[in-house]
Length: 387
Ligand code: F6R
Ligand code: MG
Ligand code: MG
Image 1 (cartoon, rainbow, N blue to C red):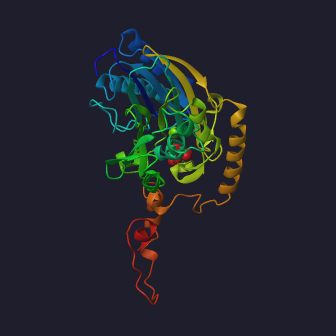
Image 2: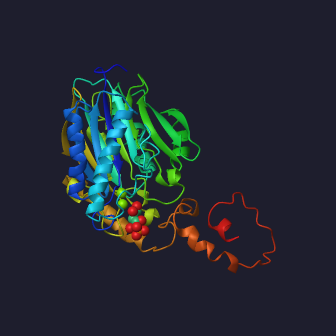
Image 3: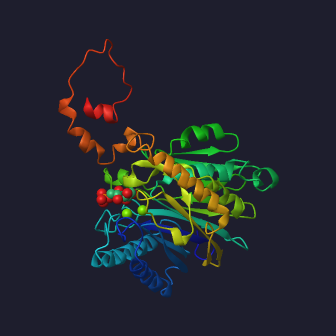
């Protein structure tokens, strides 16, 4: 689309090293990245930016007029992460450079480690957006909230009341194992949609469009580090951009699903289910059992390509009860220790260090007569490893 007519919001994040293990980003790395973006703003490459952290992930929120997947913008983010990594290494921060899986930039940051969510739109006269950033979980963690925001009338009153939302939305669902996508329309295909996105480790809602005019409504980062690297690197802590108000769900409808701290995969060693706790920026850090998984929500207005804000939307007593529930759930589920369903299932544990441990037991298994021959449908997981 032609320059100037549309605005692009790019949220690009990476864990390039953190303070006190995986606890939180160090302020000096935020400064290093901000310097790179300030220079790019001065040169007119980007229009505006905001740098922050979600736990141990460095978050670059940028606006510009260059569209999504723009090589110059991706290279800028890459440079910012590289400069921040230098500081992380100087300070001896933990896992410095962790998410930068390649030494060289090759035109697109996707596939190199960082997570990317970008959307391009013609600005409405007033354009409120909410940027969600989560730590210690995976992109599919946004499946449930997105379903509620855009397809559940018990969450979003506008789906019933507002004629501009009443036609429903289109969900683009990505199969991250196969590299395929499918579009499903709501409300008419909600059961099919749920049949897929109820498996958030594999099926990730990538984008949501308004059905009446295919206007972009939401986008999620879908990069899964373990599937890029083929091994456990760190969790694929996701980000999401949602447009709100005037024909989209209201900000309050966009935030409402997070009043329920649903169970997500991630937490300690990327290997455990735990509640997703909504927090303000001051609590954007992880502690207990490297968690619990947290999400922040920053609200902005976008005006002539400029980011106005942010508003720290979960820094509000209205979410105290969700935080308290999350603590209770954390207490309860932690008591399972190394047992499922606290620990993830065998398919997801394939990408952790557990298979190395199981390999050591492999030769100690001896055949037994069970009286029947088991008919196993697929060979993945622990059973296959110890056969
Ligand atoms: C989860 C995460 C942490 C680490 C854990 C062990 O995404 O980053 O929970 O997995 O702290 O880290 P290492 O193996 O580096 O000691
Ligand atoms: Mg980390
Ligand atoms: Mg993280």
